[in-house]
Image (tube, rainbow, N blue to C red; front, side, top):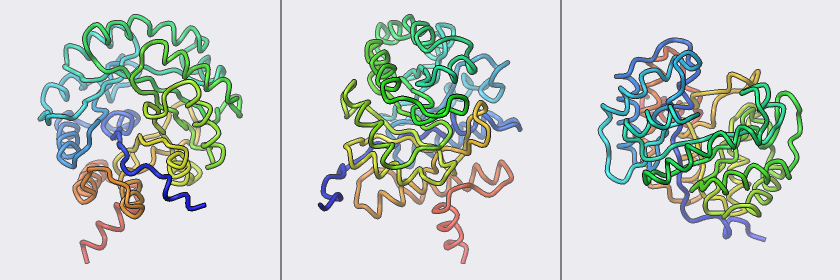
Length: 306
């Protein structure tokens, strides 16, 4: 069977570099650099950019300038600027900062939930009921993110039923989109398909997205595997920025440049200009003082330099 015929003709790429990518950087990234990064990414054609996180600066110091960033970015019509909101205080801050979408989060792993936020999965989702209602009341998009859907650093394997249960809970809160995340980057393609198919039994397929980390070098293969079962929304991070502070050895999100290069080769439309994204990746990598993690980005930049 020719699988390529069944791939989506178009995918939406959610750029998470400015938030998920930068949040664990130890050195302070000033607001003006974040603003420049968001503006560059918007000009590349992304429909959705994760730009801010309204969490306590005590826990995530890098995100302390989120309001400054949201106030100063040049908002491109049609672009959804998202913010992570862990509680009502965070939601109120996101609302004041004119976020278009708020993101709530839970884990498919009971052990991860306990270690990460000191409560059960059920308790963690219940805490978001107020945020979810407030988002709907204020006409904001609501996105749910499910971490450790493919494996956990504490309990190892995560049952398919556990993933489906959290998808159902997020659905019942009114989420418009639900991310299935490989937080520690352990997934492989067939496992990815099994998880995505199980998630799709609990939520509409066109509202599910794949969020893959590249710890074991499987992220692009997992994206392709997800596309084969009909997933058409994926998260990626410019220059492969990011990681997970709770998962030892977990490398960054899959690099946006690599995803775009693959989509280009497959003839799958993204509406995003790869060259502008490469420039954005080089910009932030130079600021951070290290080579970016995107193979495609580095190769294209090197080719230009010759």
